[in-house]
Length: 346
Image (cartoon, rainbow, N blue to C red; front, side, top):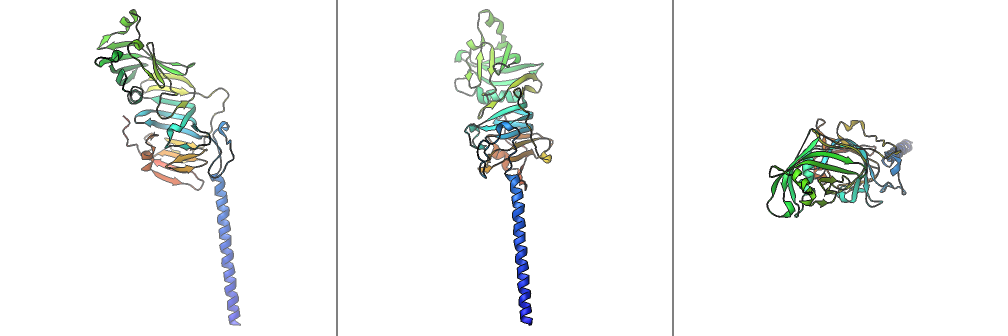
């Protein structure tokens, strides 16, 4: 009798353990199912770019990733970039169905819906020296820029007609927006070569700046005495779409304010509460970072030091993020705390 009772007791305990194990597995599966609903939740910040294909684990079905910048220094490569107090838009692939791949920035573009970017004098000079004027046949070089009293002052060197020695060049003028053409015009009304006023003499004989030097580069060209910049094409690596509704100069530099097309709904982002004062928030769509595919993206890049703006260099993004701290929440949100950028922006 004792043996039977002991056997029955053991059997009962074993059954209880099995039942408990099964219930624990069931509970784990239920929790996993609830979490996965959050992982694969598509939450585009505007319906224009909603999913267009059947969604799955490795493809959200949406082209593009929602982009929100707040108090960010964004660089394309080297020192070419801008500061943005706030910007809302999309990272869009040039090939439908492709993820946004930070290792292939030339395969995407930025569509800006609203916000502001500021190109400081040094960033403007970098844009010219490191990109626009960086070709062997250039007749202009070594630009240094300053902004004062709503005017842009340029110091550099010029090689008229592409022959002879390089001569000191001084330009001073205003910047105006040609909203119809979508161009930023620099209109110098003072031009000095070798320190001597030249603009008036050139005007008397019908000569203009483009008759002395040529400049025909992607997004930049001379037209008479105007230097015309197409903000959609002038930056390296990737293009920028969007409508600039206003442009002005102050001591901080050149401001470009973007506005959405009439009738388009405002973008609605939902960054985490712990985002802080300076961050990049990537919401919805498919994103590839470090060869890792993140679908239904919820990715936060935040400044590790809240008193400094986040600096993000697209060309150098691996170095930017490699020294930071990464955390993945149960809801699938990626948090990346980014330390100050140690690259040379000049």
